[in-house]
Image (tube, rainbow, N blue to C red; front, top):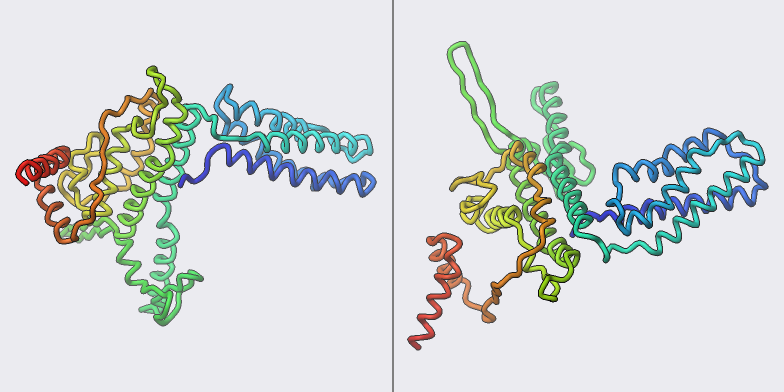
Length: 367
């Protein structure tokens, strides 16, 4: 569910380094140490090798962590190769091969030992925050391609006094003149990206502010994704990282809670099950955006989420969960379920389980 974790990223870098350097070592050995051009060596350093060295800063493992201990030899050997002088002389070739072999051995050895099962709480939280940031960035920029295509279509319309290419072939992202399978009306896309207008004359001014349908769609997808990532990936990993409680019993996923992601859950529910209208999310503790209105989620609000990631809350030790919820094991007719849900929606969200439980208790006592 997660994009990738830090161990996966470093495993990829190390694997790439090992494969490329092994290949170059074999080439040098079989060619009788024929000098490689400085441009080639510079290109190697500026791409694959520099990526490893630079990532040691920009994607650094947590200090004193197991991952840092595994990655450091690879980074040190790679940096030694990047910093080594190269003149093209035979002795430099021999030194170059030695550095290549050192990096290769380190890379392959460390790659075999990389394992995310022993991640600390801080490592898990940092990985989750990176996932959070990447997914939010993808959401906030996900409409860029569509906006670019709409702008292209509008330029053609102005030049031709009414475009003859009013459809988008989705597979090729090309504008085409006629409808067909896999083709979407540009007027539909234009409407989906419409954020309103400002209209002004010397005597009149009007502003129509809209929340673009495509933007709402992307935001709704993000709430669904990030809550699923929290629920299905990181709650379990945090419980494992926190280890054993004082009572000698391991923490469980249900012991790991978050007010922030509790609010995300309510947004996700309202987007998915309540047509994007604020219902469950009306009682949010931290994200009170909607207040009984449609949940549009403005760009400014979504950007603000970047600084709201609850790292301190997730770093704290869990609290043992005393509530155990078990769903009733029988299926009921859809019509009855709809009536029950509609009735329960008239009660505050936190009381709905209590109300339903009381109804069942009353039924049990009278039958």
